[in-house]
Length: 173
Image 1: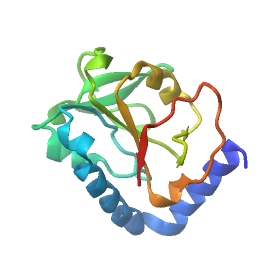
Image 2 (image 1 turned 60 degrees about the vertical axis):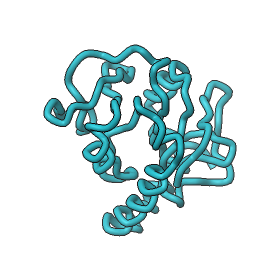
Image 3 (image 1 turned 90 degrees about the horizontal axis):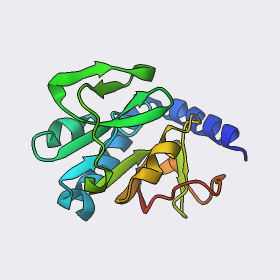
């Protein structure tokens, strides 16, 4: 199966399940992440501002904003720039994603955990993104543990991979 075919299959499965089921699945996945020792211990965490069809991180953002330094990616041209999440300083950015305003955060070595979205992940830690390559350009800069976050049906035996792909250290689903 090609990357394009796999993305289509995942999108169809999300539609088939519907918003309510995805929200229920999302709550279970987020609970698993919250209990993960690396998440509990990390003080500086790269998260993402979820799209409606992704594991919902918006509750995590609200819950941990005062307890951890949360970084969110912001689309700048063809790249992702990291910025500190401040609930009162959010604006709608590229692709309708809520993004933080403010200065770029460039101290990649200070990040203690990176939680990464994807269309699919496999048992070897490969990640299939949406096809624009944003995370492909960001992930080589990130030195900490990387956890892929997805719904259970997005965690597969194998997915198409390329030699330049940065592997996830773990996948929570």
